[in-house]
Image 1 (cartoon, rainbow, N blue to C red):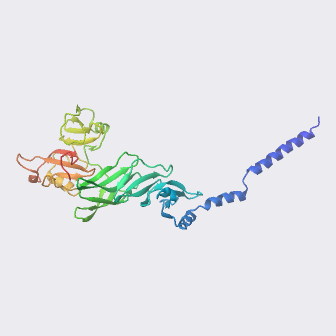
Image 2: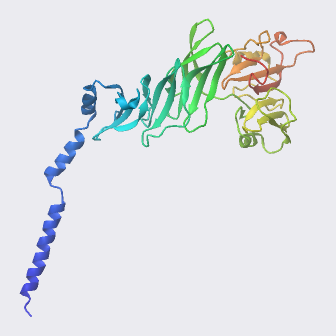
Image 3: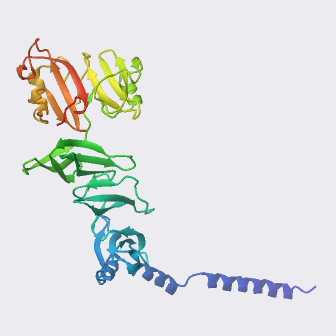
Length: 376
């Protein structure tokens, strides 16, 4: 048998394979075209394209300058609603986010460019929705505020002022919300006051403006902390209490406690501590300490003098006026819309106004004003 046809066949296969390989490989010119295609959608080109359209407004670029979110006027079939879009650098077109109210205030980005906030008008304030850039899904919880919320430096939380009117009373709140949580937390809560958050720095300081009942504005700062006694905070879970004080306690079932608690409570009795825990919420609502080892987060211990207490706490907090009359000496409004009450070794018949520098702490209470049947 002749071997010549075999050599020709092999050569033919190799030639065909080479032609197929060349045909499937992008030419240098094609690669340049693909690269140019992506470059056509630079920040500058996107900005120019959007700026040329009269129906586009509220353009807000992300901190990393890789994305822009904006509003486009809705069509007639949108029933007066406008549309929010997100356009990323390098992409041919924007992604539709959702319909928005025509009174939308605008957007604000998280520092890490992973989330943005849509602020829509709600009465005199705003309802704010948090949108995840990767999925365009929104947090279930909606933030209600009087001004636009401010992001924390780590992009995990927001701080904002809010207000609530009930039965002729006006309450102001300074709140924080952590992404993924079911609800916000109070920093301050006060009757006839308002709070407007300005900034949140890397040291954890939240700068805000406090507006008193007469309209006077005062610039203040506060850290986003929770005061504690012996490592226990209001709002802590049962497991957190056990971690701080151990498992050696006696439990009193709900229904046997009296007081102004917002729900039925369990009482846990440790040596020198009484912890009241909500039966439904499972959170610490009040802590009473008499233990010699008890100590606050600012370093005040059982047995310390009133002079030391006032030196430390009066520089940070106020002793409010009770709605029942009189200044509450030794009781301080602290973060978390809470109250920290120092009881001193007063003699029978003496009042809070009789506290002397040499009087010593004999009991500390961390609670909420409403549980004390007060409002401040």
